[in-house]
Amino acid sequence: MSEATRGRVRVEEGRKRVRTYFEGRLVADTLRPHLVWESPYYPTYYFPAEDVKAQLVPTGKTEHSPSRGDAEVLDVVVDGKTAESAARRIPESPLEVLQGLVRVDFDAMSEWFEEDEPIYVHPRDPHTRIDILTSSRHIRVEIDGVTVADSHQPRILFETGLRPRYYLPLTDVRMDLLRPSETQTHCPYKGTASYYSVDTGTAVHEDVVWYYRTPLAESQKIAGLAAFWNEKLDIYVDGVLEDRKKGL
Image (cartoon, rainbow, N blue to C red; front, side, top):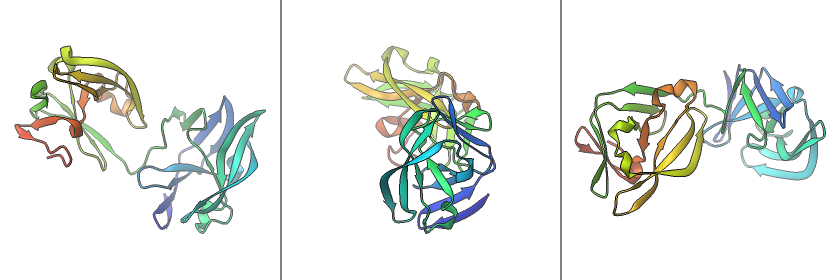
């Protein structure tokens, strides 16, 4: 990957084919996507202008970024369908590499593909790695003085920049204390998570347990296992209480 930076913004040219669609219509298709870290947490896709198939209609609005410059706000129009204010163009960006690129808003589009595989939430960071390791460490979860889970067969998920998460078989969890929740969240690396609340008899703790019923291919090892919010309850690892803020 080639790379450019200015301030806190990093830009890398990728090698995947990237396509995006709006209501079934192709908006952009490129073999030269650019990953732009507008914030430190994850990248955004920018397309070479010539690889944008949709019509880009100026709205007359602009957005200012100290690092990227003044962006034109554009409607994306394709086959009579309009995604309002769904694109940005920065022809005079102080980052020269951005001047010929178009930013398409991820959430405004209906579908995104890297090669022929759909992606969700945001582009995956090529510098983020997930390892899911089988372990024999003793994990005990306690809420309000009640042991909610006790396992010697966790899968430990290590994700770049984040604390480890312990995924436990439901047979090692007090399922009688779990209350199904309607909450769902989405992760570009793991898929769609569903949640449980925990009723200890003293209080109901909302959405402190999650699980992936059908995770994405790279995270299949956690399918059907339950994870607990380390920051909201007490987790003992081999008898040592984990610090809720820092971990072990």
